[in-house]
Amino acid sequence: MLMNMKNLLAVAHKNHFAVPAFNISSNMLLSGVIQASEEKSAPVILAIHPDELSFVRPSFIKAAIDEAINTSVPVCIHLDHGSSMAQIMQAIQCGFTSVMMDASTLPLEENIAICKKVVELAHAVDVSVEGELGTIGTTGPEAEAGTEEIIYVNPDDVVTFVEGTGVDTLAVAVGTAHGIYPKDKKPELRMDLIQEIASRVDIPLVLHGGSANPEEEIVKAVKLGINKINISSDIKDAFYQKCREVLANPTLREPNSIYPACIDAMMTVARHKIDLFNATGKASLY
Image (spheres, rainbow, N blue to C red):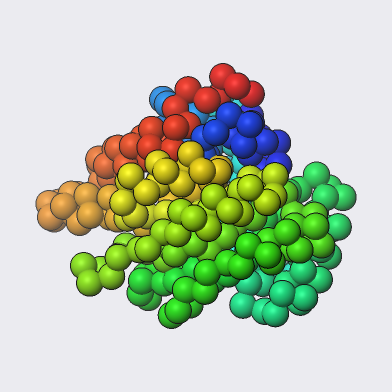
């Protein structure tokens, strides 16, 4: 069931759960995420970053759309961290049902102006829009782009931004970073910020950098109002760690000999995230 983000997250917002946004950059990850969501009867967001889109090529979106149409669970196909109007327009033309315009490093007024323009264009063709306030950190070169210093969102700016842009959902910087945290770096999730923001605006809130965070913090964040959580590194790490193990056998060369075990390893993580976000069984609400 292919849906846009607005309609998908409206149900999560009303029923106090979070929908996982799994970054997919290969057909194997796409297949595993869909299978795990079907097993858990959970809605899912297929997230694709512009760098990932350039790798898999726009034709890959046709496969994602086909999977979404033919599955029994609600699916949104979302452009993650779009940073230019050209990327936004390409995503809409490819068939994405949701786009993110990340202008969070710009001054607030410029961020509002750009996101408002994206909203006007996207809403005209029933595509939802996510914006971002504050900046997400990064844990290294294999993680999605972020800033060296996390800039926590200002709750006063949230109201101004939402009213000025009309975005359907908002990513808020509350202390997370993209990627797997090294041993000497720990996330500091600001629960007080999540609670305050949720009390000021009545739209679904997004947590970026959801991989490798303490589970009790994730559970609490969902209860406080987070309705979408981005997961990329956790599922990819599980997939490729298993891939390295399988490829220790030098005689293997067929994809259907190598990848099934890797997909299973990734699905184990995906199923756990779905449970953690309280999304299991929620497909029945749509």
